[in-house]
Image (cartoon, rainbow, N blue to C red):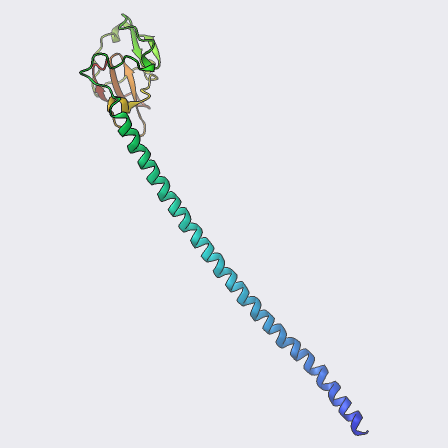
Length: 184
């Protein structure tokens, strides 16, 4: 064999063994880059989620603050437009009293609901805390307790009209928690 043939065989042997090694090295390098890219993607995702959470927190804070501001504005506006025990004509020009024509024997008037018939035993009745309001009279809810200077009713309770009184009752049982006498 001459030298040229030997050199060609050696070159061929080197290329056949070197090519897979080079490909394997390239493959390792590609996998390493892929892992790094994936790691970077995860890091970017985490940062995006962190920013998203922060944005949501900020949005919630702004929303709560807006609600507080709205509530304060509402109460500030409504202060001058409230029920006044010393003013006998406080109810005049209120839309929920447009059907009111004064006291009628055998009937109660509930603003926004109109007149409704009452059993004779309850006409002129003096409600007291701890008593129970009959179920027939529990549906005449006070739409705007703020107008009367009342706090919002607790969960499970509601203000209702009963004659000239406003009662805070438990919805489930009708138990009277408090009484505001002689409103109109």
